Length: 542
Ligand code: GDP
Image (tube, rainbow, N blue to C red; front, top):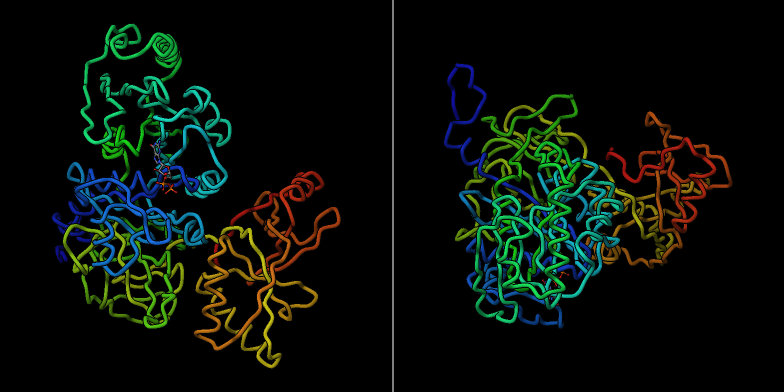
């Protein structure tokens, strides 16, 4: 660390700054089956982490990727499908944070988006904007992070690109900027036009084994090269589309992109590894690096600062009895991490030594000795860390809270032995502080019947397992019919406990009024009855 007293005294030494500046941390947001695993595999391939691509079937019939990848997973002893993948591309160090889908979808998935500087929204060309994508997009919007869009599966029949772009813009209330444009679709998909470098890329989709791509300079929609590759029908359509987008669209506005107002769109086929490199090139050119992070005091921490700081955005409890340890995932916000370093834990007002840390799929390291702002490190935890905890080597830094997101699944628990009710309530409080579940109370009966809220099924499974395993509590979980939670507020953000209409109000753990409803329809009704009320779907953690 620099001890110099000049104007840059608080900044890290140049070599550290250089490392920080080359970090890019992002996540892929998508609906299950859009092709996230396939795209991830291709990105790792381009990043040189894996050397072959091609899917293999996993144990339970679920898809896994190449044996290289599984080997890495085995070596690291951590499931990469629930963590971070790191690779280098164009002199940048890229951290791709996984947003678990399907069954393992949980609040953690949302929180991952608090730790990235940008996201890639992956859309299936036939299905358009799907439910899960929309939810994850809303979380990105909450932080105004820039979003790249990758339209996938162009080798299959789907919506025509103009209709799709219109759908994205209308559904998400965001502008799109096509960076590339598909030349044909489905079986007639022959290539893409890169509007930024004015080149066309053609490939033969029948040759999955050897993707020879031919590249030409492109003079515009009437360029005769299109006639060589496209059949009559595609040719006319592509020319009309290109004429339209070239004349109607303003140039790419980087600022609108960086503030989350406009999404650059690229097209391709992850399965056939076509268009993925174009996306990566665009990504490396425009994805923002580590940003200054706001603190609760209203100040910001410069990522290039000499001191280390970071926050916990995810805690992974081990489901395996033999390994009771948990891993706290720390997003580094400033400076440099060194294994064994001592940090101040702001919530506990204590010093901790970060003695064990795991690196993920980075080239050839097993544990991390060093990491920089933008990186994620996994720290072994014996119960000292909670979601949102802030660590720093200089004083007690407290970053802005990680919000809670509206749960969609609800349940209540009963214990066989009624005497254990108090113990259960204590355990639930503890697990809710940790961010594993959310709790809601009926104001009349209080904690006699706590309502548990979760975003994904797996959270309930983990809860029941942990109550048994860690607290020796055997519980019965009964699902409740609610599916929507909203925090009613005035327009200037004050909590509201009275609403017009016959709505029963509940309380969350910090005694804020919250509405639990059976379906979206009820929410629309509540909104109609109370037009001035804001029904917030997220709330800052206490
Ligand atoms: P995930 O659930 O989002 O991780 O999706 P996967 O990567 O597992 O892909 C879901 C299915 O879509 C698999 O059968 C993939 O082979 C297939 N798939 C992914 N990308 C493409 C693509 O570009 N074209 C086609 N035809 N299929 C694809």
